[in-house]
Image (cartoon, rainbow, N blue to C red; front, side):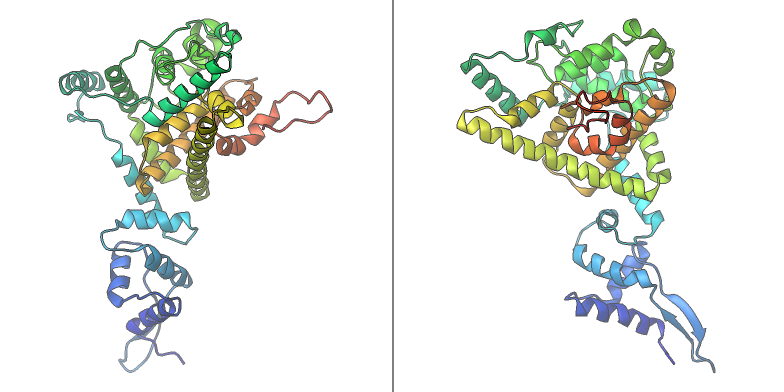
Length: 395
């Protein structure tokens, strides 16, 4: 009969770690439990005659101890540890996982937003004054992206080609560069966070500002002309003030925290891994197109880059290049933002019948990993392939 005491139960975990090449102490176990990274031992039966009681580690503790031993280091934050373990599929306690995702939203801060309890309009006025006084700006196009844009344009001119094709300008009702300044962008970004909404005009202007060398931006035009081109749709998706808000009109950070606390864990895990794959895609595309520029020949990578820069996938490219470091908290924020985006697509599908979702399968519209997540929605309304009766997968 086992006569393990609590320290003997811990010794099982310590020995398990040692067999796998890790040094774990009772102090380590105590700290991990205090931070809710490791469950406590499970009490067993009494030993009798006042000799105490038995206990044993929960089965999941053995894998968790190995994961903690791999990732733990002096100064590493417990919430980062929780996210690392969750990403590996280890059985980290659910409340700890959700707390880590929720805490990541606290990294979204707005410089000058000090009076959180005041009216949102007054907060924005105060922020506008602060942005002006402090000269705050937002980087819309990172240097690396500008270099790639300039390199493609230079080679295209050398080859006697023009980009974009003239036909693209006919799809833009407001061709021309954005008039937004970096200070304007800072205020628009702050307003979007605080109110959870943006006007179609601001969205279009920011899309144009993020591709400043473009002579036309059909995607921006589609947003800007929503009221006139699709009034029935506008009534369903725009607020009485004319802003786009697919969620409640409140601080966007609160909406992300709601997702952190309510989304199924499997959805959080899928969003986490997809956000990682999006970043890998963006960095790999940069590498590929830079190789083409280095040899002076534009190829498939340049075409994919240009298609993305003129559509929604370009936002992921720019976001990735702005985040040179990608700590676990930022990874978690990106995963929550992705979940919010997917939820917005689902809500639009419920609100509006006949959405041409198959258009999201076009090159550049979405990063490939996100397109894969939406494959069922994209394929559902896709027109039949001319060569047969089936649906052509998005490529």
